[in-house]
Image 1 (cartoon, rainbow, N blue to C red):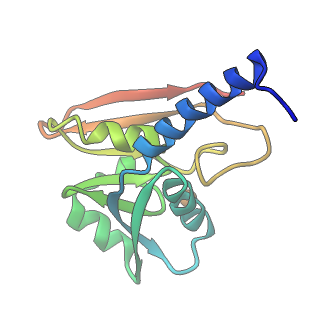
Image 2 (image 1 turned 30 degrees about the horizontal axis):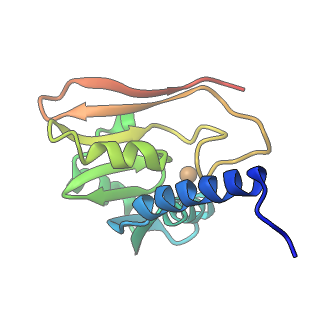
Length: 152
Ligand SMILES: [Cu+2]
């Protein structure tokens, strides 16, 4: 027979805290993802979103250039897949945290991680990470750095 020690009580309190944090993240946010059939890192990004509570509607496309054009992704910000949330684009390997932030930024037309930086979500390579930025494109056309991920 075990009586709860101070330590087990602390663990119980901590797990309650963790549960409520997960509960918040689990509130389903729906995102459409357009990708090429043969894109492996696109699928890994989808997994990253799903494990952060997103509901992903997966669309396999023949012509991603046309999709990006239609959604207003400037070629200089282009990557592999293109997500769409509330009519705005999420281009490339944008971390879930910034995708959630986009919902609080009605001034933005979209978000992008241009190219395919190593170590971004879906582009994991062990512990290696290239420095990369999440760029916000304002509806005015101006760009803003939304998040900065240093190399490590
Ligand atoms: Cu990719």
